[in-house]
Length: 364
Image 1: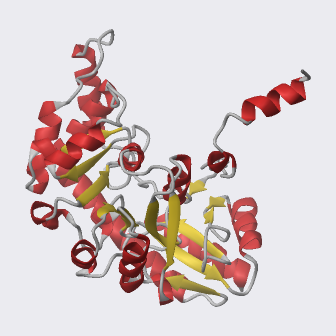
Image 2: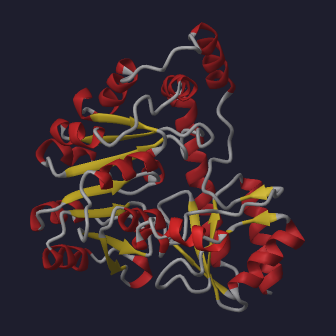
Image 3: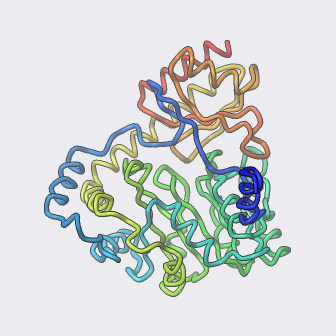
C-alpha cells in the first residue's frame, strides 16, 4: 500500500461528520494593540499573582490536584446563592460546553442555537454526530426568541444553547427569554454567560425552579485569567452529576485552582476593573458611531461589532494591522448577517482612542 493510500485508509476511520468540519483555530500575530480575543486589557492584579506563587510553594507538585476542589466549589456556590453539589469546575467554560454536549448529543440529535454565535457550538455538535438547527438572529442581531422556541419544538430538540451576551454580536437575551425557552420547550437550556459580567440578564436566579437550566461562567474575561483557563457550570445537582461523567479527571491544575481562589479574594479590585472595561466599551461605541463609512452595533459584552460600509472588511482589517499595529477580529465570514463585520475588543481608554482614530483615517 502506498503512503497516500495508507493515509486515505487512516482518514476513512474518522467520522465523515468530523472530516467535513474546519477546526476552531485563530491566527493571532503579535501586535502592539491586541484587540481580537476579548481578553481583559489588564493583567491579573499583583495581589493575585503573589497569592498564587505563595500557594504553589506549599503545594506538592508531584501529586494530582484535588479531584473536586471543595473549598473553591463552596465559594462559587455561595457567590451565586446556589448549592455546591450543582457546581462543576472546568479547564475554561469551553470544556464544560463540550462535556454538556457529550452527555446529550448522539447520532442525529437536533441542537438549536442562534446564529451567528460562537462557532464552537456547531463544531462540537458535528463532532458528536448531532444535527445543528440554526435560528438566525433578528434585526440588529436581536435574539429571535419565537424562532428559538419554534425550532426547538418542531425539531423535538433536547438541547438549546444560547450565548448571552452573544459572541460576536454583543447582544444579550431579552428579559423573559430564558423563562420562555424553559416553559415552552422540553429542552435542556444551556446559557453561556462568559460575558455576563459586562452586561445583560443572568439565568442564575432561575436555577432553583428549573432543573433543565445550565449556566456557564468564565474567569477568562472579567477576572483577567484567560491565560490560566478556568470556568464553571451551575446546574441542578442531578444534571451536574451527569455532566461530570464527561469531564476528564483532574481537569483543573493546581496553578489555575490557586489563581481562581486568589481572584475571588481580589473581587473588589477586579470589579472596579470590570466597571472600567464597561466604560471603555461604551466610549468605544460612541466614538465608532461618529465615524462615517461604518456602522457600530450596541453591545453588552466587552467588545463592539462594526460593519464596514465604505471599504471591504478584509482591507480595513489589514490596514489596521499593517499601518497602525492594531489587531482586531475579522468575523465577516462567521455567519449570516456578519458580512463586512469586524469585532473590536474594548481595551484601555488609550486603545479606544487609537482604534477610533485609525478607523476614521482609513474610512475617511
